Amino acid sequence: MNDAVLAQTANINPGLAAIGYGLGAIGPGIGVGLIFAAVINGTARQPEARGKLQTIGYSTFVLTEVLALIGIVVYFIASTK
Image: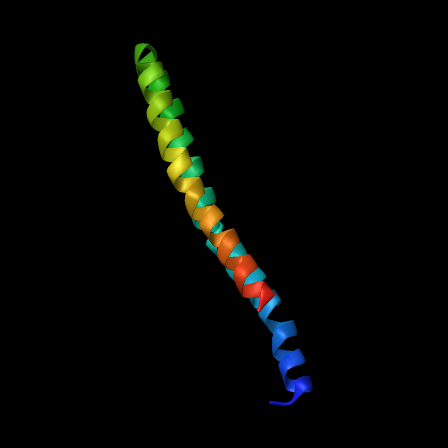
């Protein structure tokens, strides 16, 4: 291929990767909001279960954030090509 054609495709790819990561980060963002909304709701209904709810909440928070971290790794891989 011509170098000019390769340069053009390389310039488009990081932008598309950024848009894709932005759209992919919506899911974990909504998930984290739902997780902590449930923890707050459960604590308000049954205050003595606060410790267990927080443990479950933080565990699921970590699992949800792993999705966002995988997305940013894929973004960096796609933007370097």
